[in-house]
Amino acid sequence: ETGVTQSPTHLIKTRGQQVTLRCSSQSGHNTVSWYQQALGQGPQFIFQYYREEENGRGNFPPRFSGLQFPNYSSELNVNALELDDSALYLCASSLLGVTYNEQFFGPGTRLTVL
Amino acid sequence: QQQVKQSPQSLIVQKGGISIINCAYENTAFDYFPWYQQFPGKGPALLIAIRPDVSEKKEGRFTISFNKSAKQFSLHIMDSQPGDSATYFCAASMGSPDSWGKLQFGAGTQVVVTP
Image 1: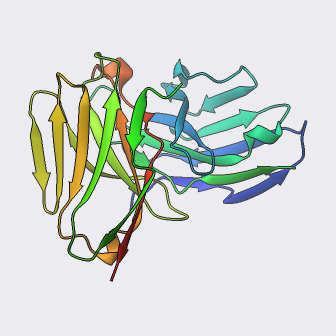
Image 2 (image 1 turned 45 degrees about the vertical axis):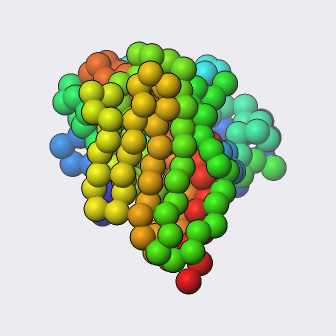
Image 3 (image 1 turned 180 degrees about the horizontal axis):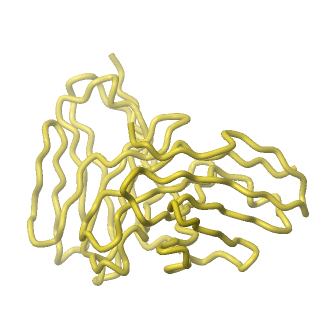
């Protein structure tokens, strides 16, 4: 059991809407990374949050944004949803500063954009 | 653009057989290479990982082989079992603490182990 939880499990939105996904990191971890996994593809790195600040971003537009809270939980916000945003969104927690520390993934939130 | 290329896309192996999945990368700054296993409806789970200072790492029935000069690494699943049926992803990242957790994944290999 990884201890990383995500909510909601599934979500259906329409194009142009905004969505917020939530992640609770594993106890003792200070870093949350978000990934987008399209159907049949590998996860793509969106961004990472450490000490409540963005600590690196992949090739995703600014309408993908996030927050990290003092308890290390995190939110992923996506504005102006597009059909291509339909995917499984994964968060993973780790302990930054501990080299080669394992990342633990949550079960994901399945987002469908109609 | 995929920084880590994975093949095959899928494979079927009989129970007791060997499953082999290959990955290649271009970025020589990568120095951590994990393999993840993902079951339907679940997030990826770390299976085994290797650093480029060793050419092979074995954990139980799972072995990673690493060829630094060819920029390739592979996963071997020995004595494959039906419970190994899952999607396997290779990944890579740079090892500095600042880069930790920013994994580049391959496209995945769906493995089906037949009884």
